[in-house]
Image (cartoon, rainbow, N blue to C red; front, side, top):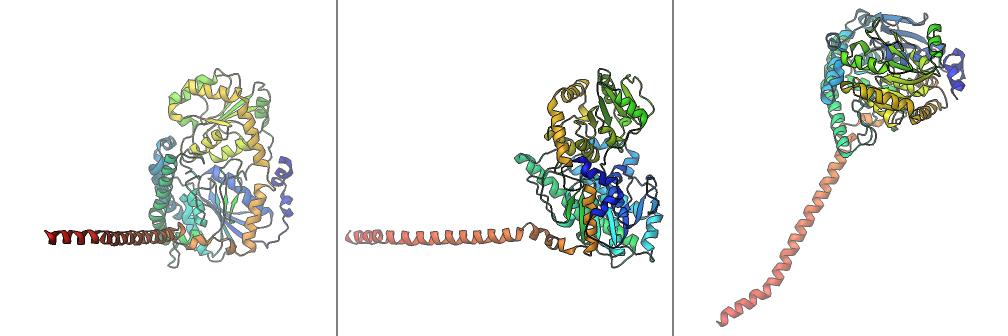
Length: 529
């Protein structure tokens, strides 16, 4: 199953299998965020389009160097929000709910201000001689302001979401995230929630939509108008509503099932290819690990070296008792007191490493790309979420039965040791991981083929307006049928009022008739007396 379409990811001519023809297009791709995992997961789409003969103009940070030479590349320096420059990234672990949403949206406003002021971005705004046919960009609140380029070049938009079906991402195309069974990704709820969880989930999603639409978007509109200097620039809400296609990093093997509109396409794991050969020294190290390998990585954004010292010591204590080889992605040169079975590295080819037969366990922060790679390779996971949607991802893995979640703030040697031995010694975790892996690979075509096909579909059909949902033309109260509910409620209330009035009138008539004979009898008695 794997080999049947995995080879299509590495053989350029495989894309020719698509029967439909589309003329060569000039594609503007905007990926201004210094988030390597985001870029790495979405790059395969551009590679597939390039292999199909399309011309790629890419705006990206100076950090990314592995870019095909034939692409026209616009470089910008990496821009980070003040919060992350001043604070340790571990601050995210204490943020939940309203505070987390407020922080993210404030960061998004700051990032848009900084990004649009970059010299290379300003030059792109003022360019006149170059024409494009399509805008491809990541939908992530920190760069929503780049939708202004869709108006400038008058092109349809193919949007990519590296965090799956995030609710304000799919809101852009009119897709409803029903809070009764679709949990907020900043929570750790599953798709089966209690009454109180559904209530909290509804409140959280309602607040998120409110603050996004009435706090975030108006401020971004000001930033866009100030920088583009175009009096005809539509509001961002209108630009979002013109999105032709939404490609989301999700898949039913890892994500909870949910209904999607025709222009929302799931391509989870688009970056996962057939395993490449490991570096020789790493391969030798893992081949010789007869008792198995445990891989420990907190991703590209969170640094293990930023862990509290007591947490680091906890891991060292537990690892020293294991017979397995532990590969630890560690950003410094060494750790005081490192056990002999622990091997440090500032970088590992994670997806390829997880495919090695001796890997028994992946200790991870629960980032989406890492979680998808573990799912694809069939490796059980111990999730230690730090922030953002990581807890949501880790809980899903635990809910599907191939992982355990630990709380970073309450790590003890006992809890870590229990979790490791539980996963290693209970075959259920490995069996469930293999099941999810089979589900991951069981698709009619590769995720890249799916993404390229639908992107070219948008080009062939001039933005594919026939896929656009009419929900985007409704106001929020019409969308939620509140006006219909109000009319039905008013009608029911009117019927109730009429019924009450009728009953009261009938009661008075009946009372009047029954009391009349008694009144006449009383009067006669009075006269006799």
